Structure formats: C-alpha cells, structure tokens
Length: 236
Image 1: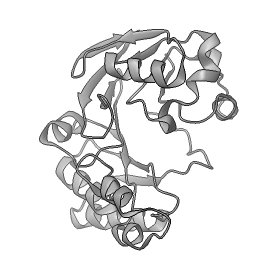
Image 2: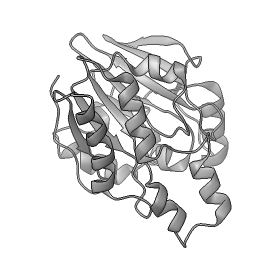
Image 3: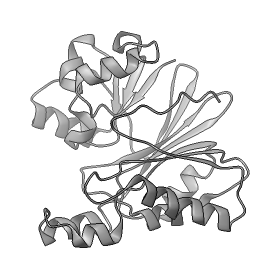
C-alpha cells in the first residue's frame, strides 16, 4: 500500500523524489488531498494520465477541477468520514483554513498511526482529539511571529491572512499543539510547511523542542523537514 498525501511539487519533482526511495508514481495506490491550494495540488496535472485514484471531498475536487481545468480520477469522501484504502484506514477531519473544505488526516496501519496536520490557522478541540492517537505526526510550523511582522515583501493584508484563525500555525502555535496532544505513543514529530521568508529551521526546532523538553517528553524525536532535502525514511 503506497499513499501520497498532497501533490504540491511538479510531477517531475514527485517522480525524482519517489525514485530516491525506490518508488515511482506508477506504484502509488492513491493520492490523498487536504485542500485545493496550488502548493498542494499542482503536481496532479502532470500525473493525471496515470489515473491514480485521488481521494478528496467534493468541494475540494470541484475547486481543483475548475482551477486546473482537469478531470480527476476522484474517490469522494465526506469530511469527517473514515474509509479504507486496502488494509489502511484513513480518518479525515475538518481544519480551519481559507480553502473550500480543508482536512487533516490520521492514517491507521496495523503497526502505527500517522497524523498529517498542515495549513490551519488554529487547532480546534476536534483537531487535537483526532491527531492525539498519532505515533508519528507531520505538523505545520509555518512562520516565526517576529519574522512575519518584519517581512517587507508581504502587504499587511497577507500578513493578517497568514496569522489569522484560518491561516497558518506559527512556531509557538505548533508548540502549543504538541503540548496538548503529547502522549507516550507520540514518538516522531515532523515540522513542515515552513515559510522560506518568515521562518528558519532553527527557530521552529527551538520553539517546539523547548516545549517538548519542558514536558519531560524525551521519547519524542523532532525533525524539521525541508522542501529541498528529503527526510530519512521512517519505519514504524
């Protein structure tokens, strides 16, 4: 069973990155889509001829097809629903973001639960409860508050959107999520979706690891991901 969550890189980049771990787009069982923003779906256009099943909700599918002028090999789910792809269980849940119907995922396998939580302005009680069972979690740490405030490239309206309740999580907000969901089961934490202009890997790492250490959670291994370099493969 081989699942890809979102397809924000070009099809060429997706192929190259899968090849680096001995995989190919042709080997994918399905692609799960969180929402329709281009940095999460632009690779679908170059992969459409492979007819890989695309799992998303109806509003997300409609937005993608309208914006990209393509027809997806879609398998629709209702937001909040659980479904199976082969022997893998997928739980979807609503997240607060400025998209049509954005979702996060908890992937349940026979050996571990994997959470995927990016592109949200704040973590609701629902969100926290749905990712709490994760053994490994991909969590957004999009921006450092001061770097965003001082950024000269973004107008004030964009800064407000990013920092708003339907925008993105700051480093401190990501640390707050970890504090709320920390458990003996959570072993691997991946910080992702870092802004290239308004964040630094060391700032994200420090904000979250300091919170983790203050909780005495020495069992949690934290990794900051990068768009340029693939993280090491994790076996669960």
